[in-house]
Amino acid sequence: MLNYFLKGEKGTRLRFIGMLLSAMLVLLSVFTLTQKGLNFGLDFTGGYLTEFTTSQSVELKELQSFIDKNHNGEFELTAQGNSHFQLREAPSASTTANSLDWQSAVTQNDDINAQVLSSAYIGSQVGDELFDQGCLAMFAAMIAVMIYLAVRFEWRLAVGSVVALVHDLILVLGLFSLLQIEFNLTVLASLLAIIGYSLNDSIIVGDRVRELLRVQSNNILSPATIINNAIKSTLTRTLITSGTTLATVASVWLLAGAPLQGFAIALFTGIVVGTFSSICIAATLPELLGLSAKNYEVKVDAHTQTLLDMP
Image 1 (cartoon, rainbow, N blue to C red):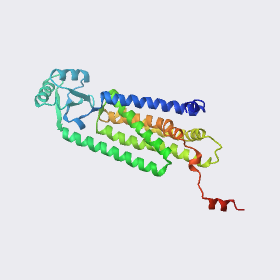
Image 2 (cartoon, rainbow, N blue to C red):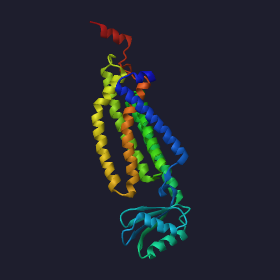
Image 3 (spheres, helix red, strand yellow):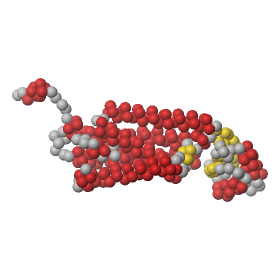
């Protein structure tokens, strides 16, 4: 099989190399997830969330250093603007004494002169319920996708699309684990969006492969050539769609601020790997599983064949 791909057309070799690269990235992502896990946000872990403003612009690092001197536990400080900040405290750190200490320090300091806008506590039980419901929603979406693919495609193309979909989700989760980016409800929502986007890309390529296989039922062209032709005919559409979507997501990433940064990073990564997997996995794996024009030949019984052969 390796010999077949390496000696095939250039497009076939590139697809095979891309699939090997994807397999290595998936293994790396799984290893990272098992070793480092995900950095769950307050939506899932619980804790205090405090928003405050300062009377003048303050550097984030300077403010973080000042709060650290008056805070005994772990916290995460993010800037929502030049003078608008958000502080998140883990459940172990979000004690009343800690909150009063650092809040008093920033409000009484003349250089900072902060004003607390809101302070809310999110219980860990609520976070557990949100995580369970989010995972259930993602699982239900995956089941619905599998049923849809089983009805729409021949099983080899369906398997390729499902594997590409799982590949995209694992790589996005692996990136969040590797960089320890906060995983919250907005990121979970982006995973559901990635499921839909990845499926759309795979279906576009799969539909074109199926059409060309039906046209080439006389087996003049090899399955590899047919798949390469299908990818070439859909590549322009795929790149334009992905490019315009990436431009929109990049704008959200750069301009929407910290609250939507995780969402934008996940969606941006999902679109890139989704476009890649629709070519290197969704179209290549069916070929490995033996997809050919024979799978789309119309089978007739002996009586029907006799009638067709009659003058």
